[in-house]
Image (cartoon, rainbow, N blue to C red; front, top):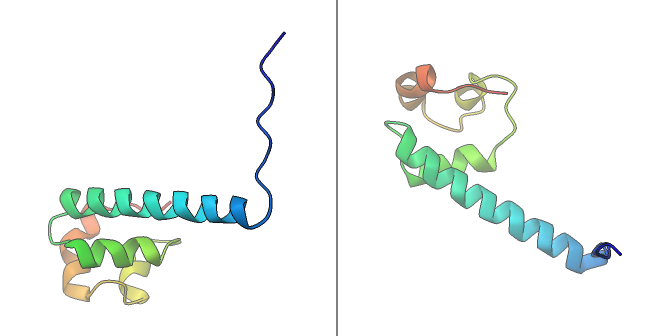
Amino acid sequence: MGTAARPRQAGAEGAAGREQGAARHQQRFGRRAEGALKGIGAADAKKIVENRPYKTKDDLALKKVVPMATYNKIKDQIVAK
């Protein structure tokens, strides 16, 4: 008939898989942010990802994720959702 449903991972194995997936997502996002935003290097991109979520783009400066000078350079290029 149809294909069998894939069983859900339980316990530590499932949590480890989710953590690895989240880490890969952060790495990809960090590389994209580094290349997409002028004034953002690898360290700033990593900090931006690690400190998500943000209610507004001003949170980047208010939470001191990036220096105010960096925020002023990138604020017109970013959107917080």
